[in-house]
Amino acid sequence: TALLRRIVGYKSLDRAVDALEREDLKARFLATDIVALVGGRGYDDWSRQQLGRAENLQQSTGEQPKRVAAIDYHYYIAPFIWQRVAAAVMLADDGREASATSMLKALVNAGFVIGSKDGAILEIIEAAGQEAADKFVFIVDYDYAGRPKAESLTECFEKLNRVFNDPALRREGMYLAFKTGVTRFDMTNNQAK
Image (cartoon, rainbow, N blue to C red; front, side, top):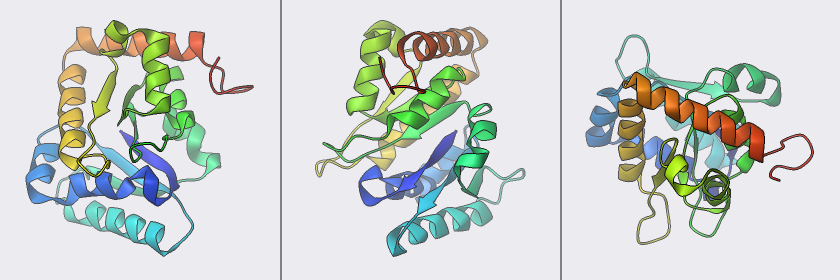
């Protein structure tokens, strides 16, 4: 699962790291089979702090093999990463859209999507139809302040894990994600048709 992006406050990487740092939520995450790639491009002290938190997680999970990997994410490694991830995690504060590009990279590689219910997620649900989207899109709820909830992200990790451990559900979700990505979106000329 990839949590990779330009690191700015409204894209809520801090909430994703919260879900992996909090002892109760970390235990639930470690009960899944998910490996999280956490990283992005940082431009200020806050973003470097979030990357530092991710690097500390990489060292502190105590699991072998490591379940959290902090990476320095740049465009030249993106093709290698997106061909192999099972899901993209795109969070944003309420009223701020998470970038669609990473979600689309996941879709065209038959990847699932975990995200807050904003513009890009809504476009994917509209393109696929609600019934189909329910099989490959997992929604992270907002808290009372309009921030993605760490608890809800953890629930989405658990749902993704259940789907991946059921070959029929995994196959159907991957097919529907890929179909939606290649038939409804165009990352070369426009992000969405």
